[in-house]
Image (cartoon, rainbow, N blue to C red):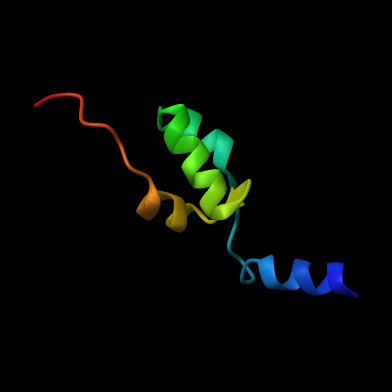
Length: 62
């Protein structure tokens, strides 16, 4: 029963997809440290909106 409750707590709303944090980090060329931060924050899967709002990019110029 506890596992079922945990699954319900982490379930996304109907119609919202989840992305792999690892794929997201690779697609957006994030540093490994940023990938690790996102995994610690969300786990291995998260909604695209959460990832896009939470990701930090290192400034390349300036």
